[in-house]
Length: 316
Image 1 (cartoon, helix red, strand yellow):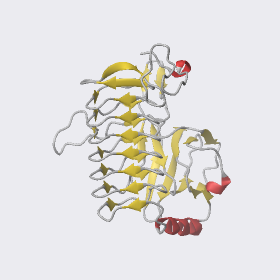
Image 2: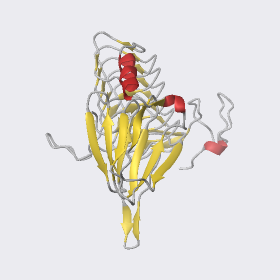
Image 3: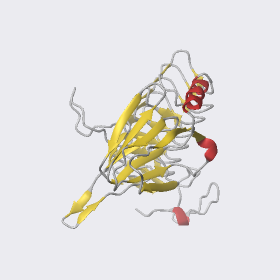
């Protein structure tokens, strides 16, 4: 089973500690629902279900509990006992909660609202649903591609000489061009375009409707040495509708905001705010862009589509 453990940065001093949880940053999805479980009878386990589409992050903000995850092939056991530890539960993972401490408060962050139709509450039904999904060819894969994951959305197209690792998650209606590689700890949203020659390494999270140009480079280790691996790779976030031009390099650990545009051949070394245009080496702020991609002038009304962008502009 793919890695599900998460660690959150603790900010603190003599006054105490603080942890910030941010959607599409240290939480790899947009948060639509938060709930928490407390005052639980330690002798009574909970859970015993899977979700068809829902993703969740579990954080034990007080006390401890044991979580069992089951992907239909492998069962893994995790102990949540610190507020800076989280557990990412993907869709189609059977999960159980056991051994609650008396002071346990288990917080759950979900990427969608409650929907009873999304639940699989019987284990045999869960196994049957897994088999049905794995036998359904709802996306296209070229005969010369290597696809090791079952987590690919409908109508996605994957072309020749592409290698997708077992833990990767790819949304619906994506277009993955020739000679690409997508590692395990990678998430692609819906309607993503990945042009030829792109390697997407562990730690890269890409939102919906993102364009990745030819030969774009993502890094994930700020201090690389051969055969020396960090405990955790840096997280790089590309938010919805962003575009990255051909031959650009995105240095690990940065966030590219919604609708941002990176010019061809740029080297991104810092966070890029939404609706901004950056290019150069290193990439520098060059103006603002409309949702249609056109560069805006100083009145922030798009000459191409006439959209007024004043309320969405982030001044740099």
